[in-house]
Length: 167
Image (cartoon, rainbow, N blue to C red; front, side, top):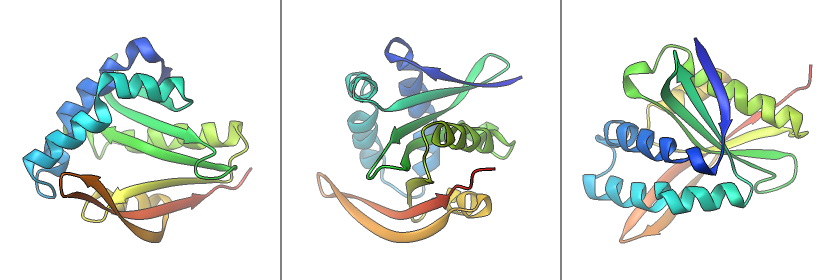
């Protein structure tokens, strides 16, 4: 059974654990090990994740038969009202390709509809194979962004958007 539920500060350590499982495999052919370690420490530090929840970011855990297999991090009204930014969306590598990513996108869409959002937005590394996944769902590339994250590391991203229609 697949379940997606919102998690709170006391459960955020699960996202940290999943990230440390997913990231090395996801980015091994794109980023150096040092950059992966740097970004994990920067973005997935428990204190950072807890602070994000306290400042309004929403986190969801995807479980399959009770086992955590993925997560979703959203920010309402970013960068503008009516927009929901997907900051984090990852599935364990061995569980990808089974509709679980779609379950997390559906959760993001549900949140957007509940909050009156008109679009889902995300940044994705231009060399990440998930770009095709997002395109297949209906996301469009609306730009490129190179972000200096320190230590001579860069995030080389596509900015993508999915316009939402109320049914």
